[in-house]
Amino acid sequence: MPLRIIFMGTPDFSVPTLEAIVEAGHEVVAVYTQPPRPAGRRGLDLTPSPVQKAAERLGIEVRSPKTLRDGAAQQELATLDADLAVVVAYGLLLPPQVLRATRLGAYNGHASLLPRWRGAAPIQRAIMAGDAETGMMIMRMEEGLDTGPVGLAQRIAIGPDETAGELHDRLMHAGARLMVEALEKLEGGHLPLTPQAAEGATYARKIDKAETRIDWNLPASEVHNRVRGLSPFPGAWCEIELGGRRERLKILRTTIGKGSGPAGAMLDDRLTVGCGEGAVRLVELQRAGGKPVKADEFLRGAKVDQGTILL
Image (cartoon, rainbow, N blue to C red; front, side, top):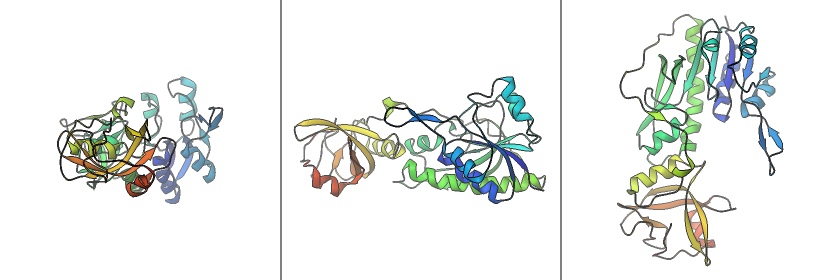
């Protein structure tokens, strides 16, 4: 018998899972998502979340409370009489009353190999740390932050030059398939749950603006991992003098380069930059107010000589 599901999610990452649940024949009785956010040049327009847009397209009721801590919101959720809640990047804390409000509890699709990278930014943190693999896990939620027992997992290798955006897209589709498999097992009454390991937990804190400026004194491998872990958003950046004025330059893609030299200095006229150890080659860049371009196109519009310093 199809399950009655409350779906909770907000960004693009959540949408494939919602769509897959509906396609699998389950009944999504309501979608919970964060409220519309100000957008537009002056911030006067309210833009609904990607999940809200998907839910409306699918004809599913949308609810967007600012919090689930008050009794009225909790009671409203409980009256849905759902079998379980599916949570994928919702962005709001679920209090104990909500975790207990359905027959089977709440199941979260999390983009890491728990207990590694609990928290808000597991995809970025895995790449920035130089991890060779990550994965998707379906976890039954507890009161702790991503501490619940795991029902299903899929390990996924991270490419040496793969960006957070590319890995994000692979993981969101893998997570959708894995959640549907987990629901099939729950429907049949046999989804074994394994407690997370007591050791090896790391916390994937939100990306801070201070982390986005490139420190060329770091080894090339760390600079490369920082760039790809922050690409495409918010993007790692530095400053460069072009045409007699300094401007911000966002670096969206690099690869490990050849040679060595002063940190932040161009080692050739092909955008190879010296680091504290080794070098990186800039592959994709974005000038302030411009669009992302490959290195060759960038060099057609900007003269960058050997010895130019990136700050």
